[in-house]
Length: 308
Image (tube, rainbow, N blue to C red):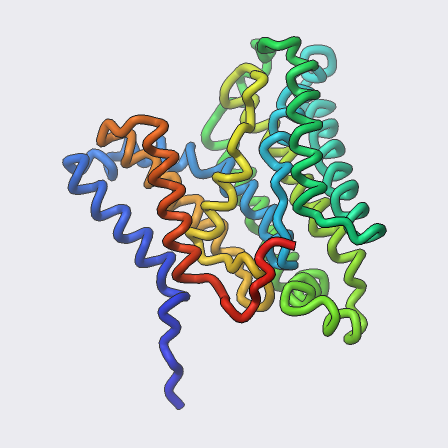
């Protein structure tokens, strides 16, 4: 029996190949030089980790716009804690803050049927203000002793561990199946015995947990906590997931590989534009146009409730 070729499933791969070819030619093969490949990998890892966590939220058909502000506040808290107690307490602090943030968003949505989009936007503004206060309208430098953790090899190992954990949760557990079931239809999932509210809370808590981790990794990479740390990170994660083929409506077509392919595509795109001398503001516009085009190609029109 012949299987029908799913063109939409090939779009992310075709897009990645096209981006690589275009910028390889435009940059005079500088894009694929060993030095630049290292730069691309460095750029994609934190976005990939954030996208892997957010995959669970998108799988249930929801969105989370608090991620960038969560990265900002956890980077600041991580910096403050590391000054007094070191890396382990800082790691625990950002993970707890991230998980509790997810529980807050998912819990409010589940308990009161509040729109999670509105809740996450509210958290975004709250955390952005808190980041501003904690940084005292300036910046906080990371302790010199923490610089030893700023190694690409460490980030690669952490990203691979996160990938394995998310893959197993998404594909080998009941929770992963429940996420897809909720995304396909909450009422049908509820009638089938799926604990919908619990699934929502756990999905948001996982997203928050890895968001907190991204905050600490961003801090270690930059060496400083800024009031602007994490700004637009949620948008980058969303673009990465959509570039990777993750349906905004969630459901059975949600795939972990979308986070990996999308993060790589976005990193190559951003790096390629830099190599071609494109202005940073123009880069954001180009990324937005690409997001719109990919959504138009991959959007499931049968499920019109993209944002709930």
